[in-house]
Image (cartoon, rainbow, N blue to C red):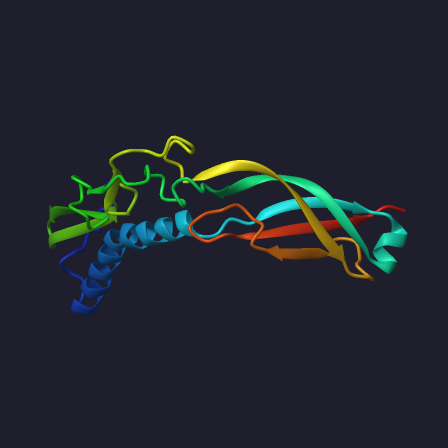
Length: 183
């Protein structure tokens, strides 16, 4: 239950208006949180890898190869999570909008709260038949050999970013390589 703002009759009209705005802000917070949650789900995921370098490798540069286990888009379903040829169905909870609205009567009138649909996660559609290869996730954990070129002159704590090698999401993130030199 949200805290209720008590407004005394002795308050001026301006003070009542400020109290009303504070109440509205409390009620609108879930709308903003729902949008941020949806953006967080679909944001590209970065992957961190710690690499140790010999002092000479850090000074003169080198080429390193290492094995990386990360999430890649499932090729069988192209990342949708649905079996090829199957159709998506409209979410019965939100009616395809991706959001659900709850209306509540308060002393100030009706207030509505909008949040991401708990059934479809904000997509508005549900998978009717899941992909067998990824079990509906749309991503698979794979091991991959990565080769990177370390530039000369890197220092302790330097970060090398490799685009497109992070975990797969709706967009693929970065691989961030943190370098440490050995003395």
